[in-house]
Image 1 (cartoon, rainbow, N blue to C red):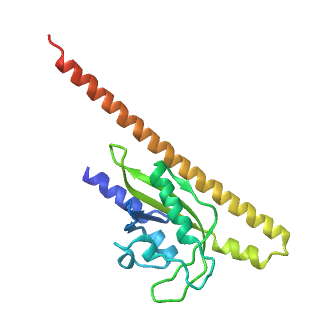
Image 2: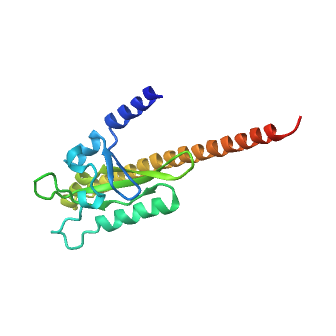
Length: 196
């Protein structure tokens, strides 16, 4: 069992998919190396912080809505118990001790459930779409490039949705296994109670 847990930890740590792990009350538990590279932060700087203390809205952007949109997504995941794919979101970052940097993300959030089906953690995954968005903005007159960027963003969103749907299928399978185990335990207990 320890070997399997070690393998899962290595998979999490070295995955090319940027992942942040949060408690249900949005405290940061851990982030893998890919996520830390994307947000230009260190594990020590993030560990134990509330998500929106670690990643507040950029105070220099009057209509910044990253915090409110992400909070709504987390609430949806916690309430419905299933993943949520967010639309393209501007959510600027502030690397440790440096000026704010413009960022556009394709975020996905989903629950981690225990054997009883209770949500014990949240997974936050982001795809950085900044280069595509900024390229589209600076080359707005180049229609070929713009449509190519739109197709690229659409492809990214569809791929991310497929990943989330696969996670949802895994969650449903886990729930079915838990129900089957409970039914088997019930049948076994009933057999033990029958007189011979």
